[in-house]
Image 1 (cartoon, rainbow, N blue to C red):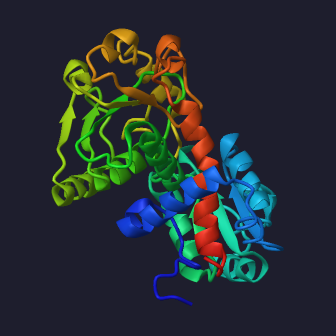
Image 2 (image 1 turned 45 degrees about the horizontal axis):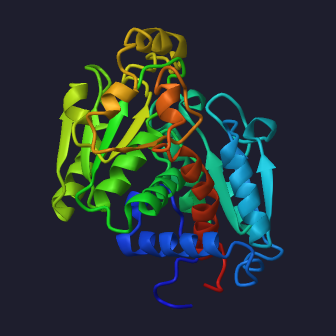
Length: 342
């Protein structure tokens, strides 16, 4: 096997991968999109099974991963941990060490999706994926945890390159908080900040006081920007954030106080608090401040809260392109990590 092979390499966040390896993924994803059902790709995972743990439900994630496995000649197996005998703090069952080793004998890869409302504290979901990776001999692919969402980050970059060109260096990304009734995790936001700062984009993070993200992740973003020569700013003024932006990514996210001391996720309180900021919506007036910016969102989008219908349905909205790209980047990652033939 070649020294630069990515076979059996886990992807928990794009930050763990070299930029050149992320570029390999993106290059292959574009090729797979262009020649979607080519014989070059349809047997790469022939007779191989991709196991999928869904602690949280999904629409696009399940659809896109199952379609990806099928188009690569393999099979995706949907599993719900709540129906399995897995050890938790409150119940007896199989340990991660044992489960990871056994599943490594069954499948070619394991995807895990675990978000904010299925963990007792921020970071516990990401830690679970890393424990599986510790004991597994097959790649662990993050289908969204409470900290990172690498497949979404890759899909975002692919979408931006489709519309802005391959070189994103110097383009301004506005990552802006949007009010809403969903109390969403930090994973998509933090992954976007990490990967786009490594691609050389200038990053403006804009949110109301009290909605800080993970300080360790923010430090990573700052270091990424130093390495690429990109600008990074945090502002609480929407007008400053929107000014001259090339890309606007409006998304609701929870506050750092979303968990009670005993590990309860306080969703109702988070929603009540967020709805007090109706002015924090991406609308046409704010978009006029930008450099004719694209609008992106990982979906599902909370229309009327995170973004107005007018912006979400405009010609500058590339949400659907990005959603489609989930399929292509996931095919590329699966092929590179689960097949020896690339």
